[in-house]
Length: 149
Image 1 (spheres, helix red, strand yellow):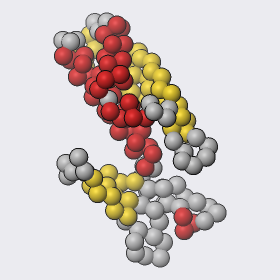
Image 2 (spheres, helix red, strand yellow):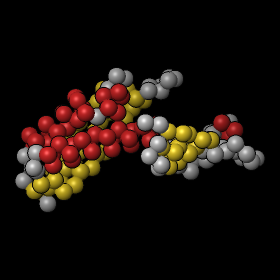
Image 3 (tube, rainbow, N blue to C red):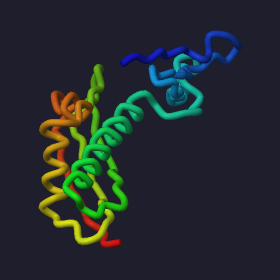
């Protein structure tokens, strides 16, 4: 797996802190920093997601993928899945994630709560590389609701 990240503000009077990542699979992700009122030269222009937001989003995508796949393999009638991630970060550099809560909403027909609980646990204990990595610095908690469709 590879990725190339390039600074988009290498030229111009107001260069900013924008970056574009091109993944090995040929996709592009834009990232930017928050504006810094005290030191504008260090701040972004708020034109895209923050890099740490993309880490959180990637983790959500990784675990949601697992949950859907595990439920489908179990022949459950899953029709939707979303996960809302909320987090806290350390106050000092490096500002790693210290707490992450993942709240899943699984939509389908007659999906047993035990199957969803098992799918989430399997993702977090065995399959989701991103959440397992982040679990080295962050306390990760989960919850879920099932919506009948």
